[in-house]
Length: 417
Image (cartoon, rainbow, N blue to C red):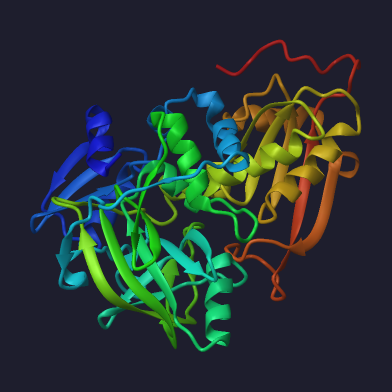
């Protein structure tokens, strides 16, 4: 599906705002109501934000029930499907420069205009990887934040060792299935596009259609595609307001030189407001799937989530049907294994609505004691946490807020209204 099809699907929820400038004005509007899709028009260009800022919309677009969303993503991760190669994609119009794309500057403190929904597709030594990277528009080229150790960074460093540049395609406005797969963390060499194809088959009954451009696989229904090379040149990237809503610092990062820029007819530029619900869900949902996989090995899960208050990245809550007193501690260890960036996880019983912060707090107030029920670790975590120690390590803690099995006095007789 193209972005315009999603707009039609959620037309009743979408707010149309005209003639707002991509320089700070659009991001300001997106911040006001972060769960509401907003469509803007500027100089004849269409810009869309907040589209995937709600779990119910994501589930509807995938054609699954809300409570099956995480399990559906996990099923696609574990059972990838081949994609279908086609000759032609939607992006048939060649553009002259970045000036024809309405790329936003989000915050005054940012280093410039940023592509935030861009997915890099790279091929090296026969392996393909797709993943998100923020990209700063600077002097007619891009400067990409390549997170150290991730697969695009690994491909880039291998190419540099061999005296080569890494050829890439930057995808903007991809189908939802590709956006979810692009945030998945799987073993090096596994194809995220095949994960996207598995999701697409669940949603539409057919495989994802893919076009090869200069040897790089690109989803056929993309709105914008930028072909280029990650070079050995380095420039300042940042500052940038990231998922925590705090300012990430300036780094020396690789320059991307562009070879061609394409768009679909009447394209819609999909942007992701940093630190917003859409940012949270696009990053967090695939991690919920990997947490679910690990925890389900040691306990019966009732529900689980990465919480918006923890940026859907650093904090999580899991409800289980507890069978033994040592089970919550094993759940905590499994959750940290499933998402190594997570900083805090709370385990509760199945009678707690984990999506209601008041109920989770109630469980902590009535079923938890610090010395008895906390697991603490000191190790490396997320580079996005500004409170981490200088060596990159952080304190992680798991809280067992479950009631003792068979003990009186813990049954809740009244629920919050």
